[in-house]
Image 1 (cartoon, rainbow, N blue to C red):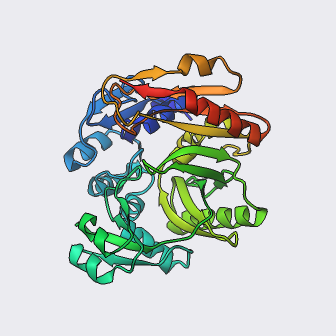
Image 2 (image 1 turned 135 degrees about the horizontal axis):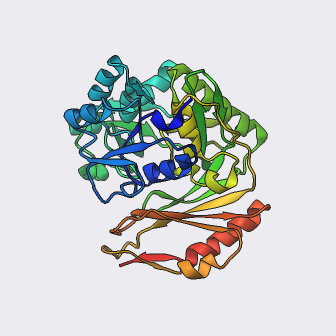
Image 3 (image 1 turned 45 degrees about the horizontal axis):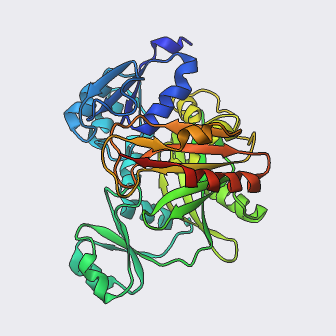
Length: 376
């Protein structure tokens, strides 16, 4: 196979696209990016950059018709254009029908129900009046479309909270008394080969509702691990999906798991794989959409991923306080995304801390997190 004659396009040039390019450079495949922001993180790494909206039919179609393979780093793309490209012979992975299913949380939840995949009970609402009629407090309201990084999700504790309820199509989900949140990333190529990563565990920043720390491997029982792995593999098989899928779970008090939601792309819960696993999630994404053999997902060394978020009181040109100090330490890997503007709680980079003993990695990571601030 001639790796350098295949045209591979990505819709989106954020940090996920940037790390995809970094991991696939070893294979020499030209990578082309479509993004509305000419200074996006991937713009200066790709072989060609096209400025345009990945929500616009014409922009996506005109970009994609020149590609052999087209993939995504964000779900919020124009799936009508992708469906037309598929008809014309462009390989679109994940497939347009899967992106359409997953980017609507209502359809996504119905998929779980129809396929007997454990998830929280839910009700669909078209407007605020239906929310008022169907809400039984406390309850979680999620926008069906457009939510990301903790946005589009809120807890309605009582009737008095209805004033802040979303007025767009949404779903109401039962509050789940979970013990922890975990994630499994699973990949599948066109041949039907499936490979999944050991489960990782997330710890959230309560103010931003974003992952602050991620631990790999997760501190869970083997039974819980097996259940999460089986469900993730079942989902990607039932979807008949090609590409990378991140499945997020709640772990209940009895050790059982239920699916929270999923993302059909590389994911924040897989950044640690760059240093902690034989094959990173980004190389696995490349391998899966190119229909290459999938790489080993075994853990090389335990680790902790720290999300570097913009300080809540700062907007502007980023200044990274404490980076020089932490770079002096052994087992510290810094990844900055090259964004030219910091905003409150914006993902500006991540740091992976590795150690053969996970508890020591966690201890070191908490100290590192105290030393780094992103201000302006």
